Image (cartoon, rainbow, N blue to C red; front, side):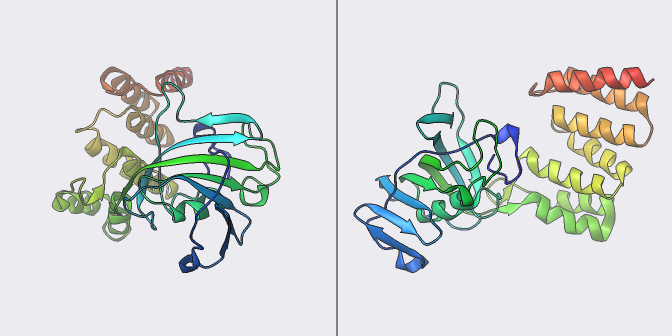
Length: 269
């Protein structure tokens, strides 16, 4: 979501309004008129509610509820039944420019209405239900702002580059990593795996997932391990890996995709 390239998994964000009764001189380029703050970039925002929690700052993890409108149409909302919160790392997640800029004026407990002009949104590129050259209207409630932690992938990848897969895993074991200090989500292991695969070291990728999957029955991990086997020409091992993943996975998100991949592999035998 909010990648500058279209990402259908994270389609949209946003609603209207704008403000800030202070002039935000400490952040430079802004001015205020009534309740609306006009940033020099062209973004406008207004506070709908005021909180008193921690301020959004670079690398802090921010949890939000967001409603996105283009014109009078809601194109995406986490407030719909079954909708999940939207989380991002401030100034790190490569969100659209106008969103990235405006959220830095918020703190936990705030609710902001933000208008992002097309040139700071998706410009002349359509993005799912968002037409090209759209003005984006965000209504964002800032539920939680957490202090920065260490990204596990950023801790491990330099060690991999210096000491290989065995050195990296040995280093990980010495960390006694816990969630109070590190971001330990599976996404961090995916980042490590993808970096390894880009180097073409697929045996290292298999070693990585052999270790990680001892502790977590992660379906995507089995999928990535199977990819490494396939790239090494080991189709039978890739099939066995996927079959095991389907059997033991604790989260079945993406099961249909994995089953389709398994069928493709069986056709290659």
